[in-house]
Image (cartoon, rainbow, N blue to C red; front, side, top):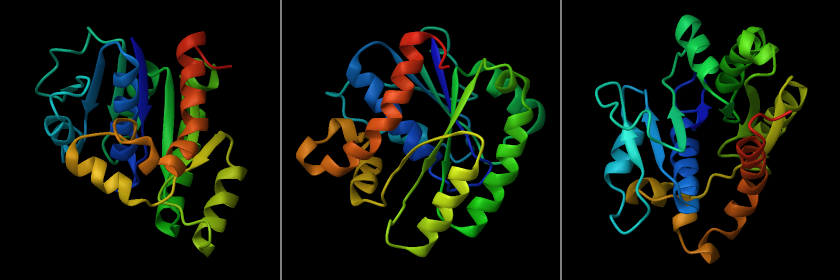
Length: 212
């Protein structure tokens, strides 16, 4: 089972958006996909429950429902805000890769800066057993906040994969229980282009076992 952890201690950073769309992508590829929802708000679980029956199945699990935990090809973990200390160490150790979403605001950058410093010290990451990448979320490239986010991410010690725009398609996908990869491509052309580097990085990790 390939395990992707989506993590950031800041609430509202875009973790569920990344996790649900990654789950939709792998479900469309085939195989069994588990979406593990560790957040108290259970947004990812409710998204999966809204998913149309004609689409590839995604199995939602949470702390109360672990029935699919050991039967999946892919597990996408939507972590809670404030993930830290022993729980963070265990989650990182279990993961093949960690994706950190970051929004372009001073509050998000400040919280994520501390989090990245903690990640650097995690044993699994220091020994290259778990790999970390960064994704900019809800980015307006013409805004000054986007410049500050870019400067912060490029100065970090982890690979920067892509910047995702603030698009209505994400709102629609969340409401309907679908992912961008379930929607008509002509409606999400720019968004799919922005996702390409992220998917390439993840697929490289799944095919090689570990990214180097």
